[in-house]
Length: 495
View: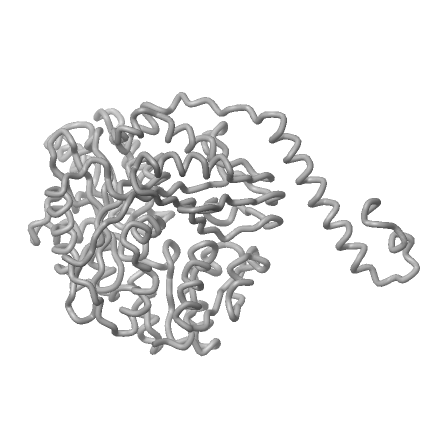
């Protein structure tokens, strides 16, 4: 087992990995940028290494600096978390070349599945069903011909993309040229690669992903599905397991297809195979494979009872995954809501500022993964995810009730959040009946009006502001070195 692991990430996922390391008796090294000097993940780690300016390309995306930090801290391994360099094959290869262990799949597997064009071709050869479409197109005329063959609506996608970036839905030919230009520009900025592909767009489709695990001894299993259809601009907001749509037969078919996909690239460690499921056709199609730990992995942990980060680390250290497929089962129902610092009234633009109050809910069946605390600053440099709120209950109905109560109890003052929006989604009949497709939030829930805060919430926010400012004043007075300063003679009330 490793003695020390450097976590090449920040925020809640860095803390999540550190907790797993503590339980395994492994020391941890945090990395931090200028903007994260006082961040929670820095305080939580055993050691911390400064890696550069606030801009991600100068710090969390700087592979050379991260590897040097791992060497300087005498770490044995690097865990990339999700986002940043977690699916960068060159980074994985560089980590291994530095005689460090990359806690994830091989660079070859990342390279094969990280390119949507290559992965789709590979899946076709492996017998995994794929969405009708075309790869390797060059120029507007090629896309125009392909769109006519497929039939509108179509989806333009970045070949090297993820997270909804470089992706455009095109309903008519008149929209095609502009969509290609926008997708190319966004893909180039986000991934340094402007290549695109085109697929048939399934308007009523559901997004269902399968968690897979492989070890270095050739064993493969799946850990069942996560329903991820509540999305906004192709970004997941609410995830759950089991999916309310899948029959046992479909679950088995999709699980086997996911294992076949992993086996095709000799995959090991945690990965997620994403599918589009069309309930009208009762058919599913390969979408992509994420060669890393997913944001929504706690949903799987709660229904299987397995700690996925533990097993990521143990498999990277060479252990065998000890469970066969027949020994794995889903228990109860889990739902995750992503709490973002964003303002629904302004088109979900990020909301920045200081957290005057940040009080997550707690109680039976409630889990909160977060990298923030009261007093922390939410900046514009990074993803506005404040926390992941996850609940578990015996049934889907009870899980929905528990999640609504937990959202009610989540107190955040200082920035605007999407908490009211998610609570409203849970109240809809479509969500309760499992009828939410990937376009539902934008097409059928787009008229949702932001509720006005009640008097109690406004008073609480004002008091939080007063308490926070008063606390800073008291701290400043306490640190005053002049013994004759008159403010030293006043009580806390005046301060």
